[in-house]
Length: 212
Image (cartoon, rainbow, N blue to C red):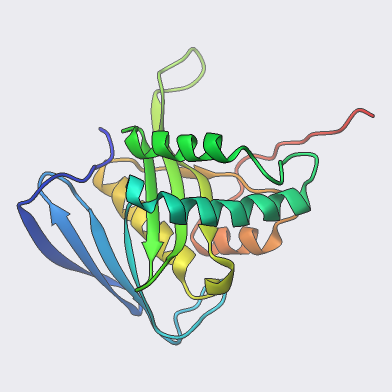
């Protein structure tokens, strides 16, 4: 079963509880979710901190969101390049990056969510459906794999990453997918703490070494 994609109306509205927050989901049948508004209040905490009241709109990204996606991706790309200069390019090809995000928006196996405040894009999350057939040693299985998560540098510690991950949790459950995976760099301790606060556990450790 593929993840729900936006479709034209009819539209219905439902309201679901979320701990210390309000969650308004706009659904368009047979789509499960199109847009939700998430209100982060004082006292809503994560390992990325807490902040003042902030209303977010989170939706499936469209090509109209490309400028915001590219701006956010540039932030996280440069951060990674500064931390791991042998692993990441500081300035990837601009056209290639734009074409890459266009493909993500169009592909049914990819889920690209973008978070907006009233006046700008403040975060995005990209994950993909991974399906593995039964093999000699392992059963057939499927999962959502989070490839990117990025929050604007000026809007961190306001619950935006938590809101994006909550949407992924809800979409995975609606699609009958019971496992979400991701990876992170060993030195990114703030990310480790955040992922653990979202219920992720260490299940695999990958080692590498440089041969000089």
